[in-house]
Image (cartoon, rainbow, N blue to C red; front, side, top):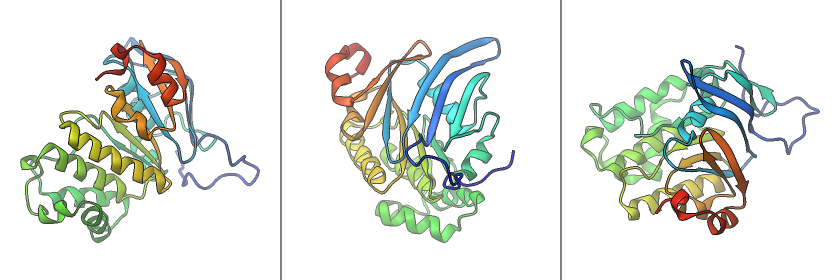
Length: 247
């Protein structure tokens, strides 16, 4: 598949069109379908909170958006272009960056070596280190330390730094709060809010909704492989049962 940057739109393309869009998307693992016609829109500069209990389809939806899980029916679009069949590397070159559940760092490599691996996208190590150590000075102090020996919060900072160093247009976050203390979760979502203010469009799947709702511009609830409700984060928090929103 030929690729271009997300910003390269046709001259007659509307500027308010979704940056990322799923329309009637179905997908699964082998013969088991887990997404049953998902509709989802991420507008330019938006933060969409994808909410719901475990098993609802949040992670599978992010895998579609990152090119890890193929679409079996429906359409996956970036900036109005259908990109069904695009690989993860294709989408990375298009400006889509994903931080999977569990952070996706290499525990047996140092901080600096983890950043070096991200140079495969074409960004220099010096640029990646500048981004990482400027935003998270503690990583500069830990540059020679094995990533697996750092705290959960520091590992998440490293994962974010690897993503941000590639200058993404779309950032996909899966369960950013997993395994972190509430104070660290709050700090990490403060950073995510800053990234959104800097113009990155963000789709974040989160079981514990109240961690992400304060920075979200819209929210979508997933249950049993479908998006069953979308709307203003405050309205969804007010209306939905706490059994769906988490603690």
